[in-house]
Image (cartoon, rainbow, N blue to C red):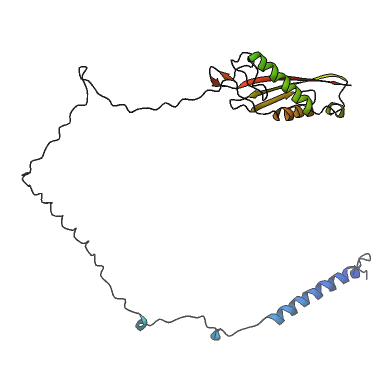
Length: 241
C-alpha cells in the first residue's frame, strides 16, 4: 500500500505556536470564569417611590390685591392780598443838577501850601570858585590866589611828611619817576570826601588815600555867598632809584 503523506511536510514545525495560543486561550477562559458573578434580581431595590394621594398638600390660592395710589394732596389755598389804602404822604426827593453855567462864579478855598526848598548839591571847580576853601594857617592871605598857593604848599608838605617813601622799593617797582593821581572833594562843611587814586600799584593807591584822609578840616569854599563842594586834584610824584 502506497503512503499518501507528504514526506516533505513537517507537522511539528508550528507546534510551539499552537501551544502558546492554546495556553493564552485557557488563561482567558479561567479569568473570565473567576470574575463572573450572579445576583438575585429580587433583592435589587431600584429605589421606586410610591406616592399616596394623602401626601398631597393643598396650597391655598391667594388673591392679588391691587392697592390704589394715595390721592394727591389738596391744592394750597391762594394767598389773600390785602389792599391797604395809602394814607401817608410820601415826600419826594428832588435831585438838583450840579452843573454850573458859564456866568456862575465858583469859589474854591485853597489851603496854604508849604514848599520845602531842596538844597541842590553843587560842585564848583577850585580854579573858578569865588572864595576858595581855606587850609588851616592860610586865613591871613589877602586874596584867592594867595590862599590857593598857600593851600597847595601846605598840602604838598603834609603829603611828603606822611607818605611812606620806602613803599615803592618794598614793592620792587622799576627805577624812575612814578606818579599817583589823587582826587577828592572839600564838602560844604570843610571835610575831605570822595577820595580817589590811580597809581602803578594798588598798595600805592591805598597809601595815597590813607594820607589824604588825614588832611585837617578846612573852611568850606563859597560861591555867591553859599557853601559848595569843591573838587581838588593833587598829583603826587616820586623817584624810585
